[in-house]
Image (tube, rainbow, N blue to C red; front, side, top):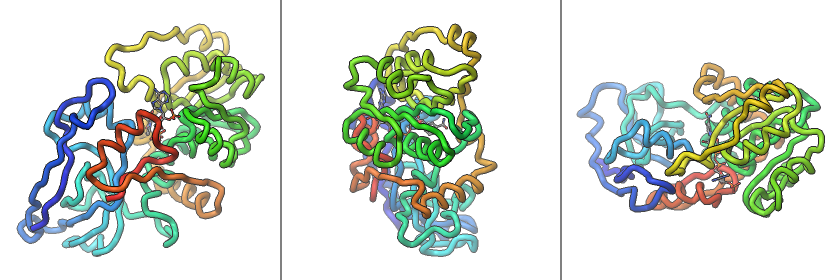
Length: 332
Ligand code: NDP
């Protein structure tokens, strides 16, 4: 019998998530031999904390449920010939140290994963955030060489990959982030221009200075006021990939923004919301490309690793305060 630690959502978030919204519990997992055939026992090694958990918990969970989420997990016991003991998989097991699966939702790490590459990267640059950047830029923005691309929350899991894919694709890239250290990091990984959106006297001027001719593509992770300002600096026929709206996830009262119709019409812009899951039929192709770029050193990654399963809420909350540089993960 295995005892798993789990984090449950004690209370739906109201505003910025608080540690008291979570509850740490232990649960006994049934013995594998008592279950159906093909079952597996897994142990989480790295867990992911992601902004989507804030809005999706309200939509898809009830109080008392175990927090949603994915992890890199190791197979501890297997009655499924497709998964050998000791193999690592990406799973959607929620915030649990151990769990049982029938194998349906498990993905083995892409083939050719180098021994020296941390397996946690399967939750970041070569995982869901990397895929989001890949499809958002290549398919939603349809970026072309020579164009200028704007990325916000640029030092985060999705943004840092989006900016680097734009560079690989021959674009000029402007990134914004919330600290000077993050700005220095963006420059170190090849962003042409980067600034701290929290300290510039005027966002409008900072965007104009970074690219006086405006922007062809805008990979928007933030929404809200930032986007209301940035949309006016799009070039004719510009494309905006609406990836996320982290500036609004913790609002208790919906923000009122400026209206988008005038710049959309006069500049004939295209603005498209997207979910990465829509592109999962091409996941293999994209993971292969992302892994190749990482191995070749063309795609750099940074991880913000929080130690200890008991610190999951802290890691999650920290993301909304901008504590993470790169992908926020928790090491069990
Ligand atoms: P990040 O790693 O970028 O972490 C979040 C970062 O957002 C923080 O570090 C912080 O950086 C910034 N941030 C937090 N609050 C605000 C705010 N109020 N205004 C501006 N910036 C803020 O997260 P991800 O890369 O995982 O996600 C980025 C975005 O992409 C999110 O909006 C997420 O929901 C979205 N997403 C969408 C997907 C899709 O399928 N459409 C899939 C995956 C992610 P800083 O210090 O720079 O402020």
